[in-house]
Structure formats: structure tokens, C-alpha cells
Length: 393
Image 1 (cartoon, rainbow, N blue to C red):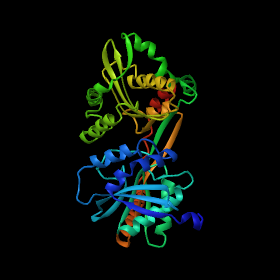
Image 2 (cartoon, rainbow, N blue to C red; image 1 turned 120 degrees about the horizontal axis):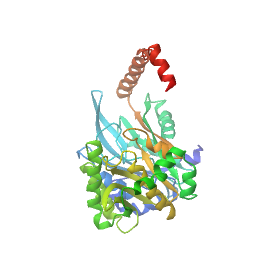
Image 3 (tube, rainbow, N blue to C red; image 1 turned 135 degrees about the horizontal axis):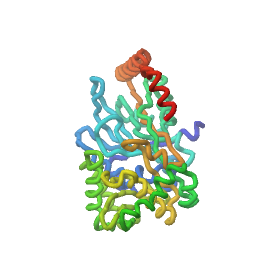
Image 4 (cartoon, helix red, strand yellow; image 1 turned 45 degrees about the vertical axis):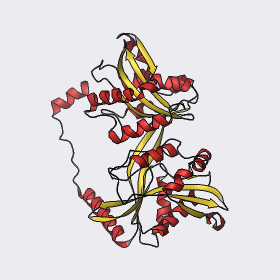
């Protein structure tokens, strides 16, 4: 990083300035490679408003990096009071997520928003400004694909300050490439995955008349209720809690006339057996949540068949990427089966200050030591007769 490119001026916007500067933020997001959904001004604003429980310690800061007056990057953060390992201290969270705290709606692909090629400059400048702004003991970046870049920035600052950086909570998100059409996507799948998502439509049709139907905007709230009910049948709990439901309802209201909300249902003889809630931004469609009747034909996967109809429709309408996001199914990692791309995500914590750094460094060291000393449990060898029987089956 050259000295000239590192000389960015960082402004600190408060919540009022952030709300009045959303047009400038949206223009920068459109030029950047940052995620269009989870880093959109609508999502971040509603996420902040839905944050619970609200605390007097919560303060919103937007760090705006300029180069000669030109806005080149933004880092949205909020101040929180963390209680970890018997300590109580200030933490700066990247807006949209909390690392290992039960606060806020789950978001993915969090990062700074910057002009292409200026991401490293913006991260360095904003982290430096953040540490000068307040005496933060932790800076946390949740669920980001740029965890290696954040790790490098935090290591740079922590090297001479006795800081400690850790990368935790690794997960994988999966995507389907629809850029060459739905048929080309099907060709890229294994025979088993193609059967589950497409070929079993014929068997589904033996149960009655099949209808894949988009849900009209007037029925979106009812659709969320049906989705929650189907999810409850399978998992024992609704798909969306009160906080997430409220955010989704507000987002759907804000985007009611934009074509971004892609809620659909799968009907068999007029009865809804599966619900899908998707959001579409540009040529990317995000599968936010789904629910299906677990008591339907067990030889079929209604969820996968419904996804097949949704992807076929999306591809015909110009969607290039269908993003299943992170998470696994109840029985198997179905997203991995039907995806042909993936992204690695993780959360990063930077602990600043001798006491907090020492506590977490020691905590992680002792945890690694316990794991290294844990006995390796080997399965009991099967009797000879059982082994032979298994080899024949």
C-alpha cells in the first residue's frame, strides 16, 4: 500500500448524518463489489432499528473515507457493551451482525463498502480512525467473506499494541450458477441431485395438479405465517422469530413495487405444501427461508422440488446466481448437493488492550491444549460374523 493511497480522510457520521446520506451510500454500493442485499441501506437501517434488546450503550457510527473529497469507502459500525469471559467492555461491531451475541437478525457477507481496488486502504484507514475515536477493547466483524483481509488489517494494528486477533465460526454458503440457463445448471449436477430437484416432478404430479405460484404482495404477511407454520411442523419452531419477522415485513413493504420480493408457494390440488421466501437484487436471487409439509410423500423432497421451480423461473427472468446462503438441512447438507459454487465465511475479532487481549489469548490457548489432550475414541471392532455380513450386503 503506497503512502499516497493510504492518506484517506475519515469522517465520522452519526445516525442522523447516515440517514441523510443514504443516497451517497447507495451510489457507492452500486459501484462496489460489496453484497447488494445485506449491505444495502434498507437492510442495514432496518437491522439497526430492529436491534434488540436496545441498550443505552448502542451508538451508530458511519466511518466515511474520502480521497481528496471523493468518497471511496464506508465502514458502518455500532458501539455495544460486551460481557465475555467475566469482562465488561466496549465493542465496535460491523453493522449487520454481532459475533457470538444473541442480538440482531442474522446477516451474511458483511464488509466495508468501497470503490474497486480501494478496499484495503479503506479498511486500514477506518480501523485506525475507529481506534482513535473511542477506547474500544474489541472490533468485531461477523460473517464476512473477507475474513483473511480483516485478519491482515487487525494483525497490522495489533502487532505493536499487544492486540490479539482470532478468526472463528467458519461456515460455507452455496450458490447455483444460472448464467447459462436452467438446463445448463441441471447438467452440472450429479444424477442424484438432478433427480431430487427436477426429475421427481413426474412423481409429484401423481399426487394431483401441481401449481408453482408467486405470492401477491397483498398476501406476503399471510405467506410468512404459512411458512412459519410449515417450518414449525418440521423443526418444532417457526422459521422467523418476532424480530426477523418484523424486519422482513418492513423490508417487503419498502420493496413492494420493486420486484425484489420473490415469495412463492407450491400447491398440490390447491393445497399449499411448500413456501419459499426469496429476495432478488439485480441478477442475484437470495433464498432467505423455506418451509414444506414434512408429512407429504417421504420419497420426495418438496423443498428441493420447490427450489427447482423457483430457479427455473429465476433463470428465465435473467437471474445469474441463485444464492442458498449458509446453513445446512436437518438430515443432510442439501445446499452442497445442489450448488456448483461456494463461498467461505467467518467472523473476526480484534481484541485491543493488554487485559482483554491476554484473557482471550489464554482462553484460546487452553482450549487448544484441551483438544490436543483429548483421547481419540475409536469404534469397537465388529465381530467377525458381522463384518462378513456387512461385506456381502
